[in-house]
Image 1: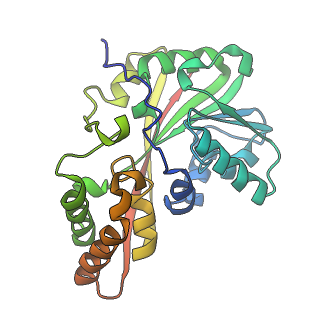
Image 2: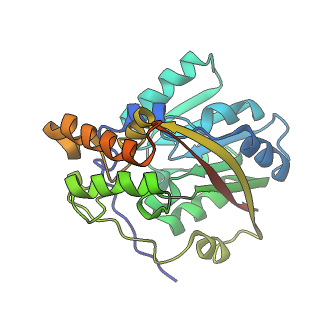
Length: 270
């Protein structure tokens, strides 16, 4: 089995880091409790968070380990992660500017590798092989997926927002290449990648939580996505945002929204 190997595109989240750190939904405590339970975390060992972005997983999970490493190829994401770690008084995280495809045993033995909303951007077969090689004997990997993509949502307010995005940016979902790339769904699932790897045991777990939004926070969220980067809107930003506000208020005059978000943990053990 082979999968299409993505070439790293440094424009993938260009201009999104500050919005990603501020407006992406934070992972709930119930997720960290689940990871602690299924991987028997006890405050020991080392965490490696691949494609860590601004540290949304790395920072709150680091206290379940002796040491944590957050790795990302986007320097702006790492800058925001470091700022947020300093603000939280965190001192046991090392931040590495690199690609997941470049990890080596020089990182030391890893107790848990996490990937939150990042595995699909990687050369998945290669990365899974490299992860297996650096894990401790009791180590594992957690691929964390959040569903309810706004692009395919049935929520009226999300449909309204995406209609505005399409109006200003085109019907085709953009991704990378400075806004010229087109989104392509995965041909092979994450589960299939793991099933064909050296990992001996695989399991799926799910938790749910309620996420609340305002118009401002949802606009900020959109600017954190690969399909609606601030640079895509450019000089039309004020008009774009005014259009979004008008459309969202027509659906929900209060300007407030909420939804139940499921989080799936695809776990594998060595």
